[in-house]
Image 1 (tube, rainbow, N blue to C red):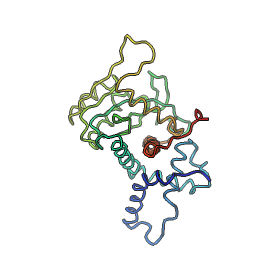
Image 2 (tube, rainbow, N blue to C red; image 1 turned 30 degrees about the horizontal axis):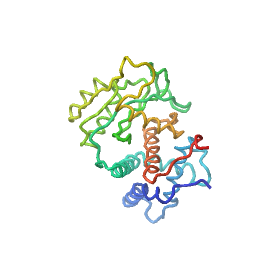
Image 3 (cartoon, rainbow, N blue to C red; image 1 turned 120 degrees about the vertical axis):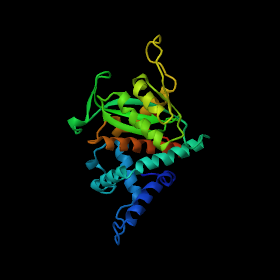
Image 4 (cartoon, rainbow, N blue to C red; image 1 turned 180 degrees about the vertical axis):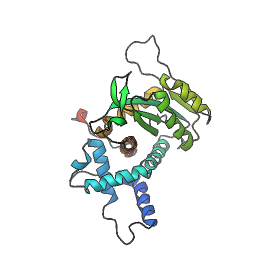
Amino acid sequence: MCRGLPDARWGLVESAPTAWRAERRGKGLDIGRPPRHDLRRVVDAILYVDRTGIPWCCLSYDFAPWETVHGYFAAWQKGGVFHQLNGILRQLVRQAEGRSIEPSACVLDAQSVKTSANVPAAGWGIDAGKKIAGRKRHLGVDALGLLLAVRVTAASVFGNVGGIHPLSRIATSNPQVRKAWTDTGHRTGAIDHGARPGIDVEAVRRDPAVKGSKVIPRRRVVERTFGWLTHHRRPARDHETRPHRSEAMIRTAMIDLISRRLIRESALSWRDA
């Protein structure tokens, strides 16, 4: 049987799925019929797919039928459950680190990744600079590298255009944010767009005199977040047919990472062997 969430981690993530089910039944759905599937095992299955990268139809028989698990995943993505859960866990981490529960600054960046063969041709493009055919992830994170907003587009979309949506989302859901750092690809549109809600957007430039790889202040925070995501095979390469499902997979990976961080549980990798 596949190992599921320990009690400590389930206690952190159960509130949002449980509230979603209660609200759904409160609207007159499924009246008179008890739930057939344990929400804990559904969450286990979604995290298992995200971590291992297997197709939905290859989900182990230890879990609910894959059609059911995928149905919950789609419903939770549409209902904002993953977004809500990310916010709850992020506040807990910030509180544990001795910071205010809401951030006052953020970092923006984009990453181009290859897509699998099942992604429709209309859903991807070519990043001419990185020589990658696939999709682009536009992320906004706080000073700890925790996710604030995400937007998935075709790789051909310029960072200056795609980065506006995460900045708008951050300005709406986190009005305390007054400072944002980004790379030079976001410098024009993002700066003008951030000025409207009162966010000072600063483009962090690479020192042209430095050759080779160099850690860039501020931007290293979001680059580290991109590195965290690659520990999960599903978002390491975009397998989702729709961009908003890709965003849900990224949020799911962050839920897994943050919940482990809160209970100080490390995930084993080949380096630990």
